[in-house]
Length: 191
Picture: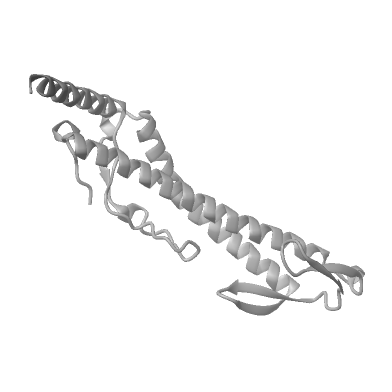
């Protein structure tokens, strides 16, 4: 459900709230995409690591990470089975091939989630930078991005109505702010 806002009728605090809301939404969507990319990169790296699990590497020595900067020596005994972290401290044993399929599904899922978020982010950036015409002055219900599954990101994308505006609207905001500032300065000088 979309709702229009006549920006010329808004007072200075409302205009500032509107600008802050747009900034917050751009930041939220940018952060969401960045977090999804980080998780996706980890799945890609994990999938790539499965390529070293082959019979020719069985029995070879390797370094097993205990932390990000501490390792212990070990030997590769089973190249056919791996333990996969499926979240919240749970691990599942899978064959190397099943693990590759698992990681591929996760990578594809994250790619689709980013593709769902990206258009909303691009639209907000365009509105913020004033690249769209007055015909794009409208509000967008969060239901547009409601179908994004947020199971990877603990945040939610089902936000309140989002208001978009163009360069002309930004200019009107700027003019209105200048008018209100001048009026306040005039009133202060008379007092």
